Length: 291
Length: 240
Image (tube, rainbow over all chains, first blue to last red; front, side, top):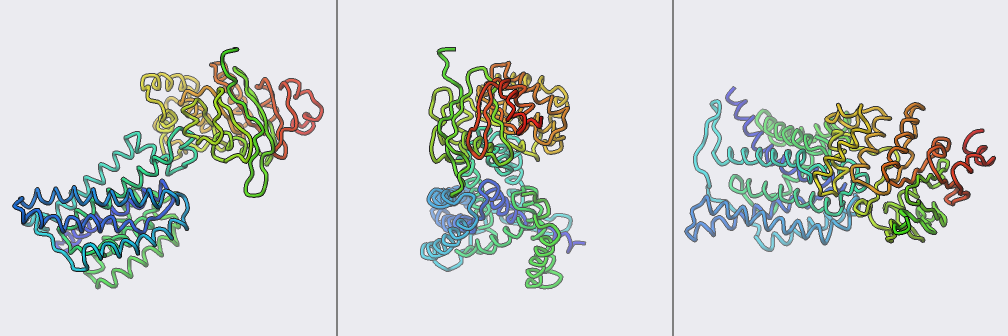
């Protein structure tokens, strides 16, 4: 029983990050009908900035928690600035162009890989512990940091969900992702909505990167693995569906965690790909997909 | 009115998909207070004309004037702010969103909240049977009801010029009459209307003036009553 709870908690921690990732991918797909394979680099940039600035600020005498919060702000700002540049000089010209945007994003992946490696070096960076200690939930222990990560992810997901369902911008974004021409006929400016969707998605990836930095080992390639899992999560859940992204993220994390415990990590990876194949065979648009 | 510019003037409009011409030198106008109809069979270019007027298809030649202003090639969202609203072919409601959300989005470009609220009441008065179901998903309504919601959504932008693209297609005869009556009522509130239809009988019965589109070109135009009496129109479009 305790093992099961421990595994569920681990799934939730990993799943929380996958969800932030897949929400971004699904939002971009919804408004622009493209997949940004360089999305993981926004995550990596944010994590790297945090990994560099926390020790730097801490060595300047700032206590570790405020140092971390400042770093999060810096990381998210830098990643969003990068996202903005990616959009303005890249994806803006490839909206609703699956092939063109695919080629562009692969190019961006190679370019950013090089830039990140050159700027930050290939060495991995540990981040000092921000919130020490562990909490016990139903007999299973989890570090405070990882628990805080989960809470933050849940809050961010909740805020995004409310924003999409309650605010004017959110409703307009949903309308654009259902039918962009009909949305324009209602007076919704498509250009601005595409930018808004892309920037919100960039912010989600940046926040995920900043949140994961203290609980993992940060390196320039950190985004790739999460991107693939996040992408699988949206395919399983259904591209363009917000609840689908959440469900898919949890699904992938659970298979990964339980598979790695009861079998081994490589079986778990195989299991994830089998899951994708089965879902696509049974429901080609994903579990909750409609588009 | 002498001071008010003609609501819609389309002059010499041509458009093509690749090398295939879809519209050839189309000119038409909607005068103030008029319901004007454009009749054409499947593939005559009706939807292309609507898409070109509302900025989704770029014309290769010609111009579109809205209330005296050249709006050729402006995107649909810009046109909404200039008083043009479109009820697209096939309704194109946001099916997974509620009826209320659809109506709210119709008023997206407006900032006068109080007036939007008043207009929502007015629009719902036109469709009393829909009032009870504001929080129902738009995609779950019947075809006729969805058409009414699409019209209601277009009215929420408080348009002065309304384009209706085949609003009666696929609907039961009783519903078609209901929609026709509705179009007249909307025109009575001062909205200028261009009704694009395949259903010539209904269109000619509500319109003051009519154009006939065939092979991407206007082949005839006249007062609706006169066209309805023309033997050729009767044979080709009215099945008489």
